[in-house]
Amino acid sequence: MTSVSGIEAENLTAPIPVVTGRPRWRDTAIALRSYNYRMYVIGQLFANTGGWMARIAIDWLVLELTGNVALVGIVVALQFAPTIVLGAWAGVLSDRANRHRVLIATQTVGLVSNALLAVLVLLGAVEVWHVFLVAATTGVAMAIDGPSRSAFVSEMVGTSRLRNAISVNAMIFHLGGLLGPAISGVLIVAVGSGWSIAINAAAAGVALTMLLVMRVHELHRAPRQARGGGQIREALAYARRKPTILWPIVLLGFVAVFGMNLPVLFTAAATTFGTGAAGYGLYSSLAAVGALVGAVLSAQRRSLRLRAIVIATIGYGLVTVLAGVAPWYPLFLGALVGIGITRLLFATGAESMTQLSTNPGIRGRIMSFYFMVVVGGQALGGVIMGFIAEHFGPHIAFTVAGGVPALAGITIAIVLARRHQLRIRVSLRTPRRLVRIVPRGQSILEG
Image (cartoon, rainbow, N blue to C red):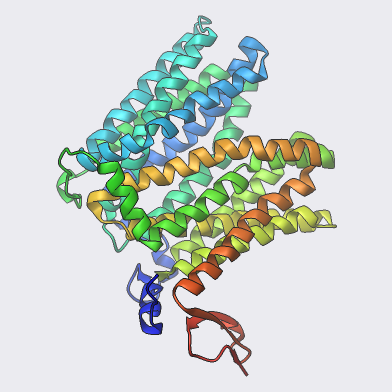
């Protein structure tokens, strides 16, 4: 491998500018100054909350119809398996097609499918195969939707506000995660699961309306790619050549497998600690609150560095390990907030760097790989972490969930340091920048 000089190494790890000037708190949601993005956010707030409501309601509906927990797992698989199978093709479609129209089509499919299921449930005519069919249909729509939706954000806000928009998206996602399950739980008890599914269909209608009222002439259109062979291989080669795409996705794989199955860990913790459903709700809420804080902090960042994403991975891992070994219950609860903050900082940083490092003409394909890693990692991780939690308890499960990503982050940090001929500099004179990565040749220890 050809060596890299210190100056070149510094350029390779130079920050990617996100905003100019020091961000002000009033600019925390600066992406909302775009009309199209405001419409999108309104739609997503409804759609995301409704989607969380429907997930809870559909799982409960299958359990009511069959009494078989395994069939609930099949419904979940039908919703997420299409992303693994069709993800790469969906990325090619995203780069070839009009992304705005793709989102309108997938949102329409979701609306119609959920509306039909809601009608069947409310009429008392629903059968389990109806649920399976709707889950598979919406799963395919979601697989096609993912890469186009992610790449479409830059078309609404442009490159300079992209990271801020991704942070706002994260806030909406976690706000929906707080509101949706709570509302759905109340509705299921009060009037049954059918109304939760019906509300999701109505929310999808709001999201579709917001897409339709956008000012398409204000979009920052990405160049459309012509039909041709080998476009998936082209995207894979492109990702391998760019460390600011390759390493965030590699780190994402470790975090997705071990760190994105918090419901499994929270369920095990609630059982072990004897806190039941109330404890599970508390744990989920604390992590969600931390994620909201992380999203706000992420929106305040001026630039992106690959090293910052590596550090966020290590930080997430160490906080999760702390939750596993905490000898004091309040310390465990505090660590859950830390998990939400650090995981969100990693997630927004990794997605932002991946998008900002990608040519707009190939962005759909790159983001399809990103989503395939997320969904595939969660699917595999659910099995792994469920087995560990069941047989070894939540303390070991939390320790593994954090320890493996932390080790991966440390290993990749060493690889990057060696490859770029960088060294760790510890400065005792500047506590706020105690540890930094610098070109080889500068002093390793100051002070």
